[in-house]
Image 1: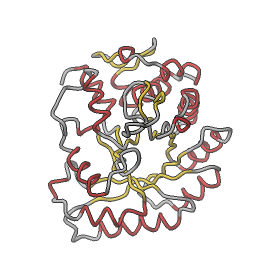
Image 2 (image 1 turned 135 degrees about the vertical axis):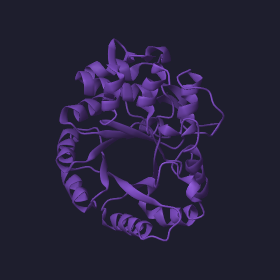
Image 3 (image 1 turned 60 degrees about the vertical axis):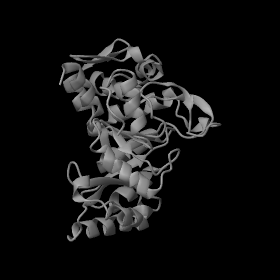
Image 4 (image 1 turned 45 degrees about the vertical axis):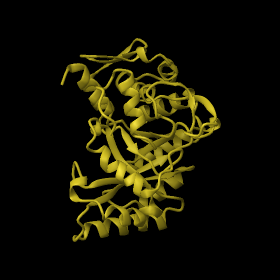
Length: 310
């Protein structure tokens, strides 16, 4: 693999958590499961992360997945990330029951929930959800970027959890401003809290796009995943504050993100390949209802090798 390709591979490794069940794709369970199975074997399948699913649809997932052959697993059992609602008790019970059934033997197709994701508004909600999260399952807490952010991150750090930011949606008002993303990333880096992002990061670089696949869908400025994860790498490695991250998050020129044999640079900041690998333990992934769009967009920019559609 050429050195430049290694840099891109380090950034993209398991970066996209597949959320095809959610808008704007909103696929049915059979389509989403079959797509995820296929994406694992696609030329750029190493960019595929977890399968994201509401906890109350785990039984439905099982009904579909039992028809899959063992050959549908590229790297062992599937890892699922289950979205749970407050209060978390009922959904946590569904996760425990699912994992117990899938581990009990006799199932040709193996999978397990190794991550839960829950919205929180107060540190007490963080502590309560963390206390109910079973061992071996990571807890991801979706945080509002408001005046409670620092106290939420303190509670998440104490619980050994992961923070989550919602960066977009299907209406313009759901899109996070670069200033909010910058504040979130800088605060996570300062407190040593890893994070994931979700929604509205289908494309690499910030640009004006339609917010769904409908012909009359609203158009708005969407955030780019290269903007977010380059900013995270710079924050984690170079200690940049929110104001210093802003130019990276607002960058709209794809050519400003320069991948070379030595690493990644943008806006006068640079990180090595090894620093990208380390930063990816801080900036974990982003949820996307499409796996194909992020990959095809990178191919169009010449950052990934052109390949057949998965």
